[in-house]
Each structure stands twice: as C-alpha cells, then as structure tokens.
Amino acid sequence: MKTLTVALLADGLYTWDGGTDFLSNIACVLQNAKKTSDYDVKMYLVLPREYLPIRVARRLIKKLDLNEKANIERVTSVFKVLCPEVPVVFYRKHIKKIHDDGGNSLDRTLKKLKADICFPILRDYYPKMETPWIGYIADFQEKYLPELFDQATLDYRENNSRNQVKNTKFFVATSKSVKDDLEEYYPGDYKVFVQPFAPFAPQTFIECDVDISSYKLPKRFFIISNQFWIHKNHMTAIKAMKILFDRKYDDVGLVCTGRMYSDNRDGEYCNEIKKTVSELGLEKNIFFVGFIPKMDQIQMIKNSVALIQPSLFEGDPGGCSVYNANSLLIPSIMADIRVNNEVEDSDLIRHFEAKNPEDLADKMIKLLDEHRERPSKEMVIKHNEENIKTLSEFYVGSILDTIEKY
Image 1 (cartoon, rainbow, N blue to C red):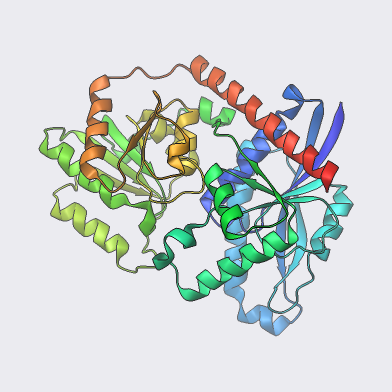
Image 2: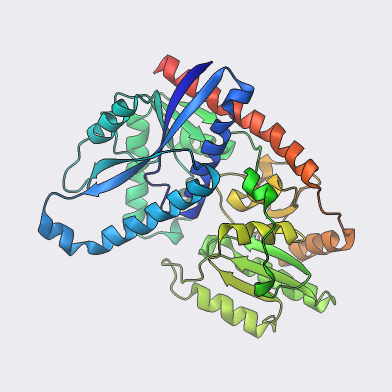
C-alpha cells in the first residue's frame, strides 16, 4: 500500500468553529482512506506561530498572542478527541504587514515533513511554495450581503480572493454554488473540486450519550447551532416558535447554542433577539445555552425533534450544523437559499421559505406530528460508512489529481 503524506493547514480555519469542523472532518475522512483506496494517508496538523522580530512590538500586541493561544487550544482540543494520532506541527508565520516571506517558512516546514501536499489554504500568503497545495474559499457572502461588512473587510476579502486565484491552480469547494461564484467573480486558469454532500459523524459522535439534564430542556425541542451573526437569521425561528405557541404547541422548546455576543456588524443584534423573545412571551420556550462542550451539543442534536437552519447564507448546504444532524439521521429544516437547494427534499431534509416564519412553523408542526422513531446505532453506522467511502474517494482523488498536474 502506498503512503500519502498530507499537511492539513489550520491557518485561517482555526479561528472559527466551522473552519475547525471542516478541517477535522477532512482528517477523519482521510483516516479511512486505506479502507477505500490503495493509499494509507499520513497526516500532520500544521499551525502558524505568529512571528514578530521586535520584542517591543511583541509586548505591544500581547492580545494577539492570547488570541492565538485560544485559537490553538480550540483546534488541538477537537483533534485530540477526533483524530488523536495526528501530530501537531508549527511553522513560523510572519506578520504580512511587517514582512511577507511568500510562504517560504511554511514550505521549509512542509519539506521537513516530506509532505506530498498541503491543504486547505484559505489565505493568499503562499505564492512561493514549491510543495503542491489546494486552495479553499469558504464562500462569497460579501457579494450577496455587502451591508454586513465594513469597507476594510470588503477590501480584504476582495484582495484575498484575487490573489488566491492568481497564485492557486487547484481549489476545493464545499458546494457547487461556491464553485460557480468563484468562476464568475474571479475567472482564471484553475480547477475546482466540489465536495459531495455526504455528511458523516466521527465514532465519538455516534457513541455519544452524555447527560444534559442540567440544561433543563423540555422533552420536545428543536435546535439551532449557529453563531449569533445577523445573517444566521435566528429571528425567523423565534417568530415561528410564537406561531407554535399560539397553536397550542406550548410545550415545545427551541434551543440555541453558540456564544451570545453582539455581532460586531450590529452591536444591538443580540439585545434585539432577547427583547423579541421577551415581547413574544417565549422566555420559557427558548433556551440560550451558550458555547457548550461539543459532546453536549451533539447530544442535544440527537435528542431534538429536528435541527433548524434559518441562515440566509452558507458556503455549503446547511452549514456544519446540518452536516452534524444529517450524519446522525436527525431531520433538518433549512431555508430555501440557493446553496441549500443543491440538496433535494428527503426524509432528513426539509426546506422552508427563507424569512417566512409561517412556512417554517408549518414544517416544524408536521415533524412534531410525525412522532418519529429514534434512529438505531446500526442505521447511523451504515449511513456513515457509505458517506465516508464517498468522501474518502473524493479527497484521495483530488489529492492525486493535484499532485499529478501540479
């Protein structure tokens, strides 16, 4: 059996939960490559260590160091649970505004590891790398919802995308929508691999059976697992809950996980959410549980009637939360935005008209009235085995294609 050495680059991904999930999902898939291909994949988790040569400058930006420490703990803690055998390696990353080494430091590290390939690369820092690599752009939210960004962020995203296209020969995208947007907004001489929609759960999620009684949740509840950003559109789900309440489904809850802080694009957003819940008299039906341990979140998804994804923009169908729910055979109700429509309605996927709480409420009530049986562990395992095979073949094929044509 041949060996492929893959460096999974965390730069730009480990600062947000969705990016960390995406990275760990790739690692879990590639761990199974030898079951579905002629290759055994050896992996490294490659993390940046910010480098500033001037001691005074380092003292002035201690906050940066603290943020980096928190980000590193985030991604390494996830990998310790899901992929504990993947070693962590650091490379020296220069602050681009002070010194741009074009990726030479990273490439030296990759050569020491004898890496055959490095991906997913989210930044434009690495034009001088000799090691084959695959780029990644999560989405083009700024093209559709520019009002959610300040001008500096819009400029940064524009420059980053343009430089990526200029320097990158291969991309991986998590949806056809992202591929189409990339080719429309930034045409160039590159190839895009589109990851199929084939959600899977790590064994730890399948085996998860933790006690969440301390949260004091009702017997029947729906769940939203999103950050509290404006475009995640919690408001539509809250208004749908009011409709359920008025239709005598007043024993049903809505659980919202995630850090409840004001979106920096609208400082009043979270206050507005809390005010709306109070005005609608839903304080006993809506549960803001905060940023909770991953296994608690997974257990809540498993115990829920369904997951709701009201988001008005995602880079892949339903985002990470639908991915988690689908892998565990838990239904999802998601807004009918373009990327979500890449997945057709099924027993596990229902669409509702985005921003329409009445339509969402109708879909929620239908699921409540179905009284579905909980999926057995055997059913979940079979579902996951099929999807892991699909994804493993996709990633190994994409890696080999990139190396061959690089």
